[in-house]
Length: 274
Image (cartoon, rainbow, N blue to C red):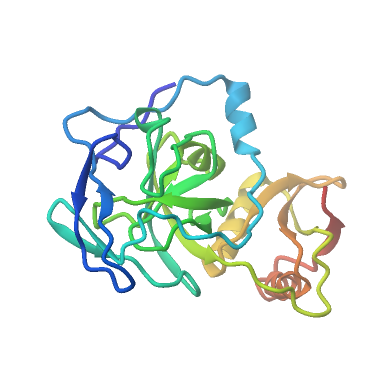
């Protein structure tokens, strides 16, 4: 396959500069990995069609409370002469912007949190969120979504807000284009609300369109209002429809039911997940 060209360097090379920064809670010396220079562009791995399909279907990691890593958590660090500050908490973080991805060039190298980078796992790099932390990333062009574990620092170009692993880029279907406009939402472990069933997941099937193009237009209208995981399906009675989900929280499912009706896509049908 033709690999996308990386336009900037990334964390991970086993060369470190030790920069002393003032810590609010200690006087420790914090190692800050510096982006590699002069080592050429990144590239995609040589994978078969079957492997691409497998990566596109990787299950999302379970969101749990994570202990902060010993490295990479600031409170601030310096890269290329610029100082970056680490947020004290990921709670409530949500941002839209451009995502890129990194792959074979950095596979196996140490990330800022100390974990080895595995391009076949659902991970990501972020400049300011505390590490590690889980985040949901949604491709705003096609509505595809995945959960990643943020365990690295970057990207360090101001026009990008997150750098995904190759596997995550495959799940969001932009591994061939190199970048995509996304929404990033930090996820923290929370107690389930009452009257919600978290043991079962459900999908919403809605709409009946004569052509796939009509279904695609309805999907784009829906994503423009609220990005979510959705796909076009062939309906048993002929034509095409939309499949939204999965949903495990009743309140979220009901919200999208109301949205489908408001957008005149049709009364949705609740379908148990698999």
